[in-house]
Length: 73
Image (cartoon, rainbow, N blue to C red; front, side, top):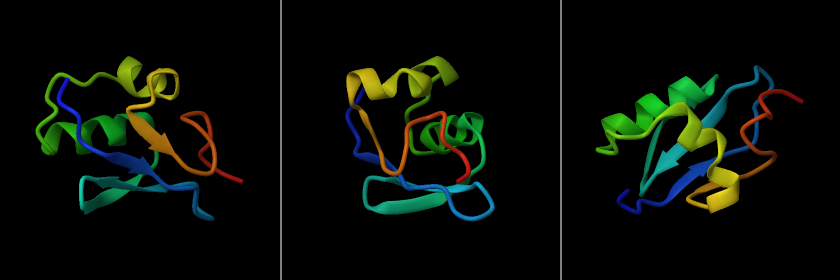
């Protein structure tokens, strides 16, 4: 997998999380499937939901305000 800095920001009041890939904000994710789609659009076509779910272990996605299980306060 090619390294591209990915940051998932803390959940907003509606539970969505802003996602940045490289220097670009790519959208608001409400599920891990949304993150997968944003990453695919950014050229990481081989990313699956399991890759996003286990990313805290490998550190290739920076999760702010909670990991992949945090979608609302």
